[in-house]
Image 1 (cartoon, rainbow, N blue to C red):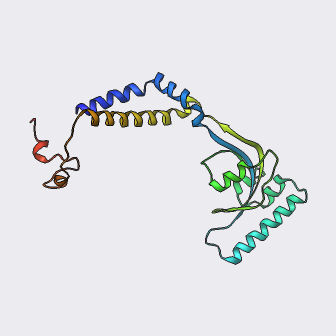
Image 2: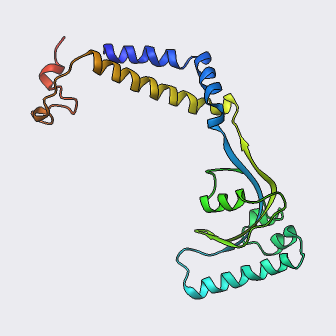
Image 3: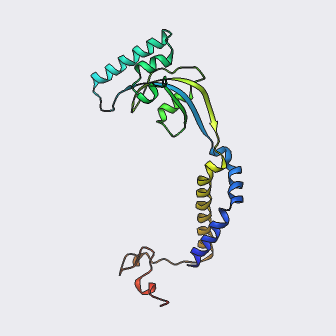
Length: 199
């Protein structure tokens, strides 16, 4: 009970507004993530597709790639042919996407593109894609309010770890592993006899 009270006190001290703001300022750049903004063309291809379905999807994607290479605008080809209805209606515009929000292969392909540059066709578990960068990749750093939950969770985890190390160093504890799990003892090693003290 004393250790729990001490932990609560330390956690409260570590998660004050000023302490969290200090921590945010010190780790601000590390909290940043890359962001891409692309248009996409999708030809769906489930992972379980057979060779014939794969060949048909690849042939369809090659046709779309040829249309773009022939000078057709990306938005027009996406509206007419992309198999993702939500983005097709917007000319393939996916909007800004942060790293971790989409498939890793997709994100890395998008992050390689300069503004206006197009990818070559590539595959993900969801199908075949072609991308066009609307904006260059950029680093986005969240505001304190956006990052507060993550900053506070890290501060609490570190505080708890430090306190545990401190208590282990200051308070000798003898373990009896042979007694764990026997005679109704809990996983903490405290039996029912000890648990009834203080009544």
